[in-house]
Structure formats: C-alpha cells, structure tokens
Image 1 (cartoon, helix red, strand yellow):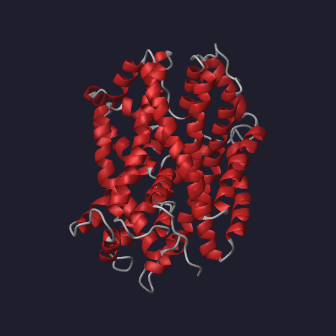
Image 2: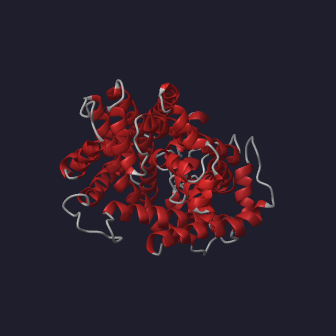
Image 3: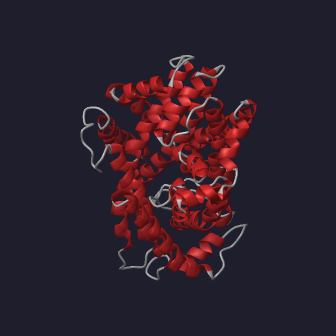
Length: 458
C-alpha cells in the first residue's frame, strides 16, 4: 500500500479535526438547550461530561487511526488478533457516513441558498416571522433549487478532497476554519452593541437551578451527555481517519482536549450571537432549523445593515457545515481507497455521484414525498436519516470501538495506552482501563436507550 499522507502542521490537524466536529449542532442546538436547562449550571455539567466522555472517545478513534495508519475500512483488520471478527463491524459503520452525507449536504445547501439570498436583499426590512416561514417553506417545496444547492456544495467539497490531504483538504480547510473563528469572534463582539445584549446573555448563562429542576434534572443530564456525544461526530470513523494522518509528536490526550476546546468555543460563542439578537428584536429563540431559517432570518432582516450581518452569519454557518462535509468526504474517500485500491480521483468521482443520488430522498421528502412519515407523526425522510445516524450508528459505533480497544482479541488496553501516550503531553494512567472497560460502555448504553425511549415511548 502507498505511504499514507500526513498533515504538514499540527495546526492543520487540529483545525481540520475540529472542523469535523464543529457543525450545525453547535449553533442551533447547544445555545438553546443551555438556556433551557439552566444556563451556566448546564454549561458546567456539559464541560464535566465533555471531559469524562468526549475526550476518552476521541482518543479511542485517534488511537485506532494512528496505530493502524488505515481508515475504518481496514483499521479493525490491521489491529485485531488473528481469527477474531471485529472487522465485521465496518460493514454497518461505513454506511453511517453515507447516510450522514446524504442529508447533511442538503442542509448545507440550504445555508448556501440563505447566504446568497441575504447578500442580495431577498429579506427586506419589515420581514415578519410569518414571511420568513413562508420563504423557508417555498425553498422546501422546490426540489430543483434544493438539488442545485446540494449539488453545488457537494461538488465544491469533493473537488477540494480530490487534491489530496495536504494540497486539498488542509490547504483549504485550515484558512476556512481560521476565517470561521474570525467571523464568530467578530459577530460575538458586535453583539455587545445590541440593546438586548444583557437580557439575552442573562437568559443564556445565568445559573438557573430552577430551570433545570422544572425540566427535570435527569433530562438535563441526558441532554448534556447527548450533546457531548453527538457534537464530536464520534463512532463512524470520521475522526479516526485523521488519526491515520497524524504524526506522533504529541499525546492523544492533549490533541483530544484541544479539539474539544475548539468545538466548545464555537458552541459557546454562537450563543453570544444568537440570544442578544433574538432578545433585541423580540424573537423567540427556537430550536433546530426554525432557529436559523425563521427566527434569525427575521432578526437580521430588521436589523440595521441586516443584509450584511445576515450574510456574514450564514457564511459562518456555511463554513461550519462545509468543514464537516469536507472531513467526512475525506473519510469516505479514504475508505474507498483502502477497500478497492483505486485512485483518489476515481474514488471522488464515484462517491460524488453516489452522495448526489442519495440526497434525492431527503430533498423529495419535503415536497413530492411529503406524505411519507417514516417515524410517525410529521417526521420526514431527513428525520429518519438523522435517527439512523445519531441514535444508532454513532452510539453503537462508539460502543464497539471502546470494547475493541480494551478487548484482548482487539487492540488491547496496553497497545491503546502506548499509542495514546506516545509524544509530548498528558498520559493515560493504568486505572483508566477499568473506566474504559466497564464504565464508559454503560454510559454509551444509557445514551442509546434514552434516545430510543424519547423517540418511541415518551
């Protein structure tokens, strides 16, 4: 097999790995649940779970990648003991990346559409929430526009990946992530000038144990655990491939902590943008797509120079989403190269066509197939795809990988520990075996079970 490429710099690795983790959940979910479940009290809880769940799980994927120098398509095969069957797990883990891309590319297309629409003044002063709802509904009802936008972001992202890790992914993603953080800090500081800044930040970060109690303490705990788990994109091998591209100069604990810090910075600062804006213009901060495409569209449309601030915000969101797309695209391209020994360009062309076709059900689920509700109620095909990834592939994949690095027939804790501890930085102590072997799998199992309960029984 040809020599695996490596990142040209540590900064490149950190920004690209963080870009894989940083996504839409940081912006439309984290700020909302922070305000809902107790402000600063919830943030403290979240940071604790980030340390005890997020960091260990990141080290698991990174260690598998750096030790094997393979994608998830071959990592199990290279690491496992002869005669064991751990490698069979790749056959259900790999499809998770394709399902994720099939709907994530569609949502990224929405962001491209709104960025361009904001820039051209499509949402004039006086735009109400009702008008914003109508405009979003018109987009969802038009499969042709959605397809063009999805095709565009997929074409750009796959085009970047086609140039390789250093000349494509690192060269483009590194400055894009730096610009993303610059936009984020710029807009967060700008929020200080809004009339609703104090009220919005009070709602966002003032510790409120009453809010946490009213929602239910256990519900808040699960929300914090779930946010940590899903925000890092762990369990489907997307982070694992970047371990294969790492050098061994730094311990995996140090790299995992830095990735978590970058991811959390985006999530926290997003709230400094969203809540002051919503409270300044009397808009209820919603959750999910309605927060971005309805509430914030209304806010920016009625703000001084709203076209400018709105286009900047959606540009920031577009960068956040495309950084994830590029990272997961790189993962699936590496998987194809490892499995079929084909060239990068050929793998890019084939997978671009596959992802474009796989995006069609998600697009049609909002118009021609809108009567199909796969999970009951008003659910869409996108909801089904998100359920398959978020509630199945990610937790089950993480569960299997944690067992794999501690099992004698798998990687074994000693090899995992040695790989994690290679390089400068904090080390994994021996007692972590008991936590990784017996405690962390139980936590993941609880997250999986509660997710199913909330969807089908609550």
